[in-house]
Image 1 (cartoon, protein in one colour):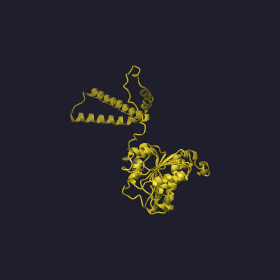
Image 2: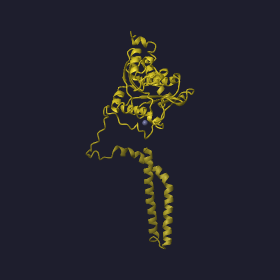
Image 3: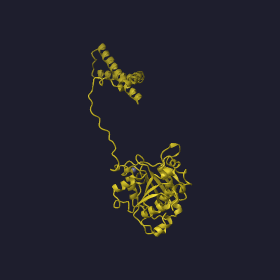
Image 4: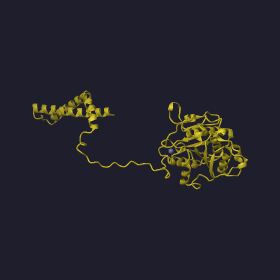
Length: 364
Ligand SMILES: [Zn+2]
């Protein structure tokens, strides 16, 4: 007989909120060594509901690094994992999609339907193109996803895709070749444990934003969000980092899933008929008046030197023209009036430019 959940989780309730996690649904896409063990740990942390998707069968070579044992040999991994968790963890609900997650296996719409129900997506397939696709559909349905990975030199990483406007998994891995191997790396299961532990902790942090594990997702002092948890080799220390959004990322530009409710678009403003009241100086114009008044004395101070040089230039130009053309500007007093007039016009122009520039900079 199955023990009650309360007894089963007696030693961990309080470390995590088992009651809350029981209501959470996690989609695990790719049920290999990492996906199966992350799912098992999440179920044993209290997560109540799962969807497993994988098109492959459990082979003998999988056994040393998989949550399933010989009893599930040659059975579809998704089917096996759903059956295993329902049997092992009291009250767990689990479904299986025994298909590959590529375009041929599942359509975008089918995938959206499955992901939309999830509070968290664990993308743990062994194919980079498929991982990119999962990331893109996770953005389309606006659900958080984690991408645990394990590579050459036993490097491990967990990328957290929060959703837009954060960088996506493709923003981070766009430089990698889709033909690059994601599978078959030789490593001990014990060397995978770090990436499994990290994925479980980050996943629980995403599922319960009030939990202590949610603090992993931001650096100290509410600094930038951490998107990446990585370790360059099994001997290196784990490092945390924010990722950068790529401007031309093909995943970030994905359209919202047709399954999501339409976002209300603001209705364009109707043309209005102006009344005499509207024609009075607007508040903006009135509010600029103090800036303009304050700018006048400064425009005078800053403008006096350019004005003085301008006057000298006008005098020299007028004098040169009169000498070269051998004429006097209408004789002594008229010539003087023209010169003084141009000095006054120059003063007005200099003041106007000064006031405009200074008042505008004050406004900013
Ligand atoms: Zn992106």
